[in-house]
Length: 412
Image (cartoon, rainbow, N blue to C red; front, side, top):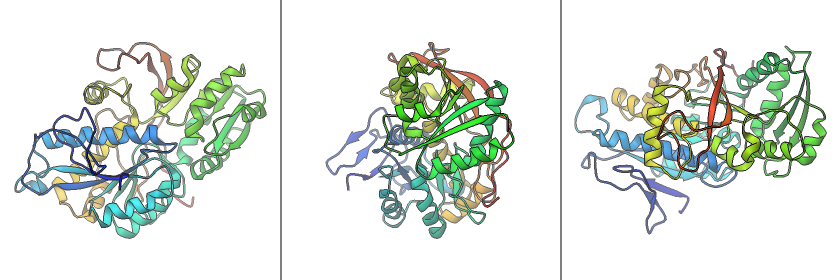
């Protein structure tokens, strides 16, 4: 059971401590200890191609749990003693292991919710399980259009909107820059194909732009042939291939292709590490965080003090942090019943520090009119001390925030 563990996040969260059973715990002793803990499920990628995203998600959740527990835990409906929050973690391994992990979380650990899903190939089957079990589940970066249905009531997006919504700002970007030729590389899996379809739909509104599309398998690491097949393009879109996006950037530069690259909601630290100097000034990406705000900066400083091994407070960590804060608020108001939690979430708005938009949802769990931030990665020191580690030499320069995106309605 080494890929399935219970985390008690209390006290200092600066280090993950492995114990004999193969589980992990956050050390410390602050917070309430007598009332039984409330378990929140974490289903994310700790191994596999999406691990750089999932490790950030888990750390962000741990930070939030630690803050809640140090403040006295959650007083259910304002009565009785505060109860600690614990994280029960399952590694989905970026693939089919997610189904077994989800079932263990709800059936054995009896979690009140599940959060942290990155890949669409994970989200599609687990969303069906969440709806069947009537347990709220929160997606971080899974954007396949088919994950939600009009009858979904327990599945919620938190950072990446559906592919149909994510494609619109890219076409707008090309139009703003007067770009007439766009190369697109997508991954041959649920998100990639869904993004391709959505981009084709969005492109119909811009008939003066030529799109050249190449499809590559998810594990691809050498994109040379795909880049050459794109031809002479003025913009490369790697949004549809998250695991390979930073490699696409680096290899395009090696081929002498100087076109800027639009990313895939990828961690900035991953892109900077994989692409190096080729990333600066050429890599731009959409994020759900607002890095220029005081709220983001304050939270980032707390995060990096707790997890100094991480280079940057990514929006994956922010989404994990938001998940815990949302569930904690719901529990305070309606208790630990998963169905009541889901109803509370669906009918309320949450203003999470550092987010680029208020978190609110449609009846079926789609982000309701989010405004994603668009920024370019630059070689620069952060604007303040504490926003980076000694090895960090980059900072995202904000270009603009998108207009509110109309929520995608499944089947439309």
